[in-house]
Length: 137
Image (cartoon, rainbow, N blue to C red; front, side, top):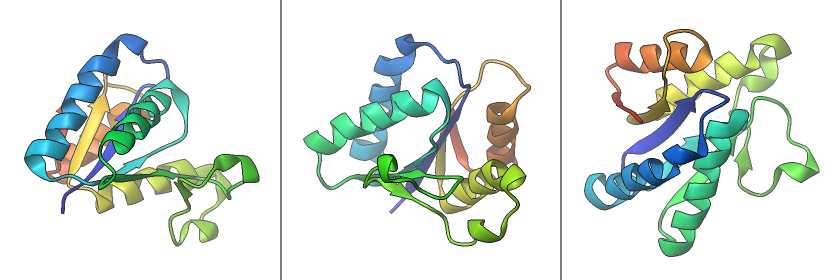
């Protein structure tokens, strides 16, 4: 089964939510995606988590995990995971290490990238280089 992950700018607008929902519905219905990994920084990740939470209520066969780049706290919730191996990474490099891990686990990467600098652009480019199916909103 295909796995999907996400990268987007920290300051994305709420107006992308309908398009995001449409893309996710298509991935579930037409591409068999049932597993999703999302980060926990910025507005884009929050929008993705919100839409995935709604879709999971409508379609319980899908699952998603918020992939942390730091050790979990009680407030992080049941939908979080810490990728194996991150504990040996220096804290300064954990976000990048986590993002590379997410790309390696995925077949499809959904992005919101509007400029060619910053972390979201960097990881979109990496996904392209690794021949992942990239969908930019």
